[in-house]
Image 1 (cartoon, helix red, strand yellow):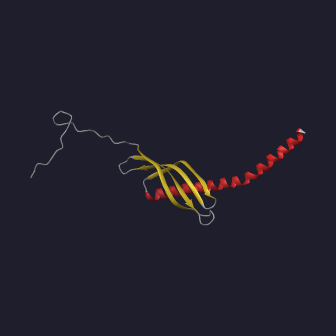
Image 2 (cartoon, rainbow, N blue to C red):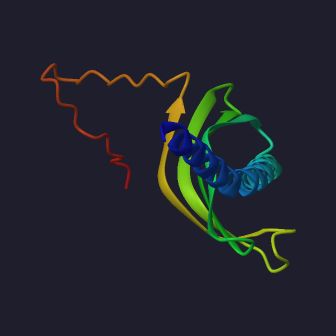
Image 3 (cartoon, rainbow, N blue to C red):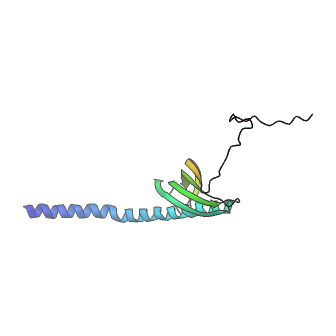
Length: 149
């Protein structure tokens, strides 16, 4: 009797395995392709708008299907490395989501809406600001005024 249950269990496991596998692999491959296209779109548009950018590094990027073949939601966080005119470098981190839609069953995608949820900028060579000493030694300086009339 235990062999009958073992055979039944194996048949049920085989049936459930075959139900989910092929579709999931194709769907995950399709989402990975969309992620790569979205990353390239972001990188190209940043470098076109800001020629001083030396690199774009993605810390997080994943795409979820809202409606298969019609609507995707992309979540991202990336760092833009940029050299400024004053020979300084900055790292700007941006985080947000974008809504992508397709009118041709997923062959091409358009960004419809982007919402930034967080951003910050780091100056790698910070500026040093020093205070002017007070003229009377009190530590408080009065603003200089022009008395010419």
